[in-house]
Image (cartoon, rainbow, N blue to C red; front, side, top):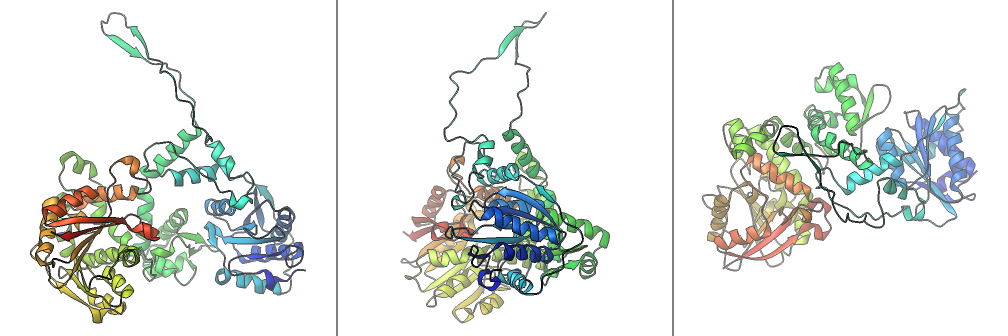
Length: 579
């Protein structure tokens, strides 16, 4: 038998076929993997290497010998297996060696819901199991069923290529078939979606509707051919997308309830039973069990045994203690105050009156300023967004010319901490209302920049703190109407030196819908501002005009995504200089 220690790598199993990795060893890995995962069913696919079919059969033998079932998806790419694992909620094994030479082969493994299995998440355990004496075969044998994932995979690809919020338009798809190892399988879903290497011919004429005169009536009435047209796969896909959009509030509230009850944090150390989670959260056990099923359907937890659940990689950012946490963002944007305001969107559009203020009786920022606990959540949510884009600003903008950066409306100092950490020669001032900077001292100290940065409380609509040569505002101006924005910019102009600069970091609205590309979140942001603050997302030209009215000249606009930070792809920086 091959050498298990030689083929188990950091993130997969691979080696030279029949030398390091033979059928006996692959069968052993199949048996051990079946014992490692609790679901009792494993999805298995393979690439087009010559050795893959026989190694697949060996892996299947190992799984079946432990009494577990096999879902065989056949020739596939690794991403197709991941899709199948997520869609079916089952662990998977892909017989492939990716880009390695033809005489190699291997196994890529994932737990249910496509959770990767690496050295620290299962491969080390699998190696130990492979070195141990062979487990006894069960008295029964599992079953094998063939399952095609092409239709579902097609829908998944098309949903990624044309998100639900996208306007209907023709798209061009380029398929990379797994380095050639997936054969023709990626082409099948695209062809079944009526894709073509050539656009369909345009109709040369449109047949006008037939006209007839109704007995006893003077006007001509128009009638159309009553024969209904057959539904196409695109019709089904669009209906499915419409369902997801129309009922998207339900999964949003499932996620919000999970975070509010502290379930992701409770699962941080590993799987727990429903009863254990009910005790830690103070929830009703029967109701919580139903919520956990909903969380499983949303993909943020996965079954880990009878009545036990584990947090998935998708659910990990819902923890409050991870660097990429979205916990506060979920609590803010899916919380009651926002929820009620969005629920009256039709009235906001009909009347033009701000929804948040109409529902709650006070403006958006006043509401949170009056509620310290809610304001802390607001500040944390803004900080979470900033942590995702701060490094992009720190590396994507040239700070070498300036000495002191003032972050106007800087809240808890998250953005300025990123900038100062990346530029040790800079000094900083975080400037915001008293409730805004209340948490800044702690965060600046945690970032190790408290000796180079101070927090100053004040109201930028009255006056802006002096002492900087670069005045920075992130996600501030889009909260306000043009009159209030002009006030903020003029107050900055009053204190900025003649050789200083102003830098605005915000989403920019494209000029037309055809230019939206992947930026549909910008439109959602603009709608949120319509509901909450009376602000809006502006175009580059509108910023240039506002700059000019306040005594600045627009000098530069740059997308942060150009610097390699995908998290920042909604944001641009707009620079101006005093005139």
